[in-house]
Amino acid sequence: MQWGYLADAAQRRHEENAARKGRGLKIDKDHALARHIEHKIKTEKWSPAAVIGELCQRGWSYDVRICVKTLYNYIDQQLFLELTNDDLLYKKNRDKQTENSRRGAAWNNRDGKSIDERPEPVNRREEFGHWEIDLVVGRKGTKPVILTLVERQTRKSLYVLIKNKSQKEVLQALRRLQRRVKGDFTHVFKSITADNGSEFLDGEGMKRAAKCGEVYYAHPYSSWERGSNENGNRMMRRFLPKGTDFSKLKPKELQRIEDWVNNYPRKIFGYKSANDMYAAMI
Image 1 (cartoon, rainbow, N blue to C red):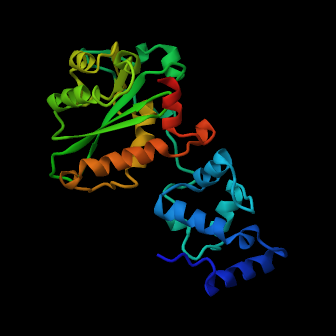
Image 2 (tube, rainbow, N blue to C red; image 1 turned 45 degrees about the vertical axis):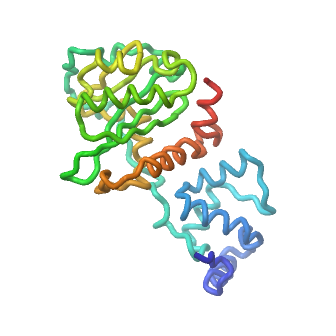
C-alpha cells in the first residue's frame, strides 16, 4: 500500500483544520513521522500511546515531536488519509470491573489453594516467577485451543497450541514449556493462578508438570483476578479474532504473535517491552 499522507485529500484536511485552529499543524511539517505513525498503527497494530512511547524510549528520530493526546486529536480530526478511529483496537474509556462488582460465588476446588491464600508480595507483583494461565478457544465446533501463560511481574507471555481442552493436554503443554524457558525453571515458575475450568483442576499434576510451588484458583466469574491473562489475550485477539479456526494455525504464526506481544512497548514499564523486563530477571 502506498501511504497517502501527501495526497490532495489529506492536504485539504490539513488546511481546513489549520484554518479552524488559526495556526499550522505540527504533523504537516514532518511527513516521515506521519508515515511512521500510519504504519505502526495500521500494519503493526500498535496503539497511539505505544507509538509515541516507543519513540520517546528509543530516541526520537524525527524533526517534529507530538504527545499522545495530540496524536489522538489528529486522528479524531481525520488528518491522516490512511488512518482513522476505526483503526484503533481499543476504546480509550473502556469499562472496567472493580472488586465491588464481584459475584459472590464460593471457591470450591479442593485440589489447590484459593487466590485468597496467595501471598501479598505476589498480589502486588513484587516477586518474579508467578504466572496466570488460561485457554483461548477457537471457532465453535473445533477442538484445538491455545494455552496462554503470563508472568505477573514482567507480563511475559508464552503460548502453546494444544489439541483440546483436557487436563492431559494442559499437563503436556506445561512439560513442553520446560524446553523453551531459559534459566532455572524452578526460579521461573514459582506459582500459577488459574480459573476453575475443569482443564485446570488437577492442581497437583500442574505443580509437578511446571515444577512450581503452588497453584492458586481465582473465584468463579472473576476474570479480573487474572488481569494479566485477560489483557494478554486481548492483545493476541488482534491477530486471532473470535471465530478463528485454530486447526489451521501454524506454530510459526503463533510464535510470531507471541513475539509481537512480548516486544510490544508497555506504558506501565516506561514503554519497555515484556521481553526487556523478563530479560532483566533471568
